[in-house]
Image (cartoon, rainbow, N blue to C red; front, side, top):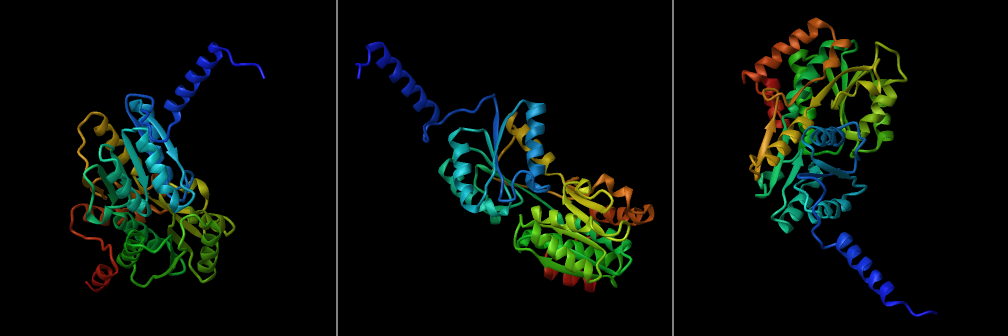
Length: 345
């Protein structure tokens, strides 16, 4: 073997040092751009047609309008949350988002390890214990779901409607309770079937639950189940047009089944996330608090495509109740206990 020349040895050392600086696991490396953001999904993934996807839409808007450098990491399992968040913290990104209530413990742990980093979490209030470097963004899902319940009750022909939830939790319960309250407010005689998939990504389970509900007499089903909801749309597309309907969630999901989507309850997560990053970029944002968005704040509503299949007189009545909620003349229940009282009043 020939001996390495001094020039070659020097070059090899330089390459090694550059590589170490660029890729070392504990090296703080500033992301490209004046302001950078990272997003860690829950196990539903970026293309869940739900809250992960709409959150990422907010980041992409920030990239386009504010010049923010963005990057997303998909979590395949719960154990990925901490390493994904940690990766962005070590990259020294200016804002690091975690999506979904399942990620709250990981956010708390990593935020504590990196007190100088700024984090945001969507769909969790951190149990009321929000670290000083975390911004919690939540929505009054019960208010948007109330509108869906009214639409379903005023549109059903069978007198039976359904609700499919993802993982049983206080958050998803808000969707269910709000929906049932809306059904009751519009027509107390309409029955609501409820089922949980205990998953946010099992589309096969979602289709199975939807099939059972449709076969059981329900003609309209609302879901709050992330990727599980894709199964609902797969099933409803196989059924008679104008007779069986699905109601989407988080974003306008009508494109999944244009002729079978009655409405969608939209959560403007993208707007909330964009506004937080804009304020952060302009140094006008203070973390360590909860930001909550409901009908009054235009944080939730029915999708604009609702007018395609829902009758004008139905929407007129829904809008009347919507205004009552905005004016605080009507308080939409968010828990089973509140629902019981609501139905008795």
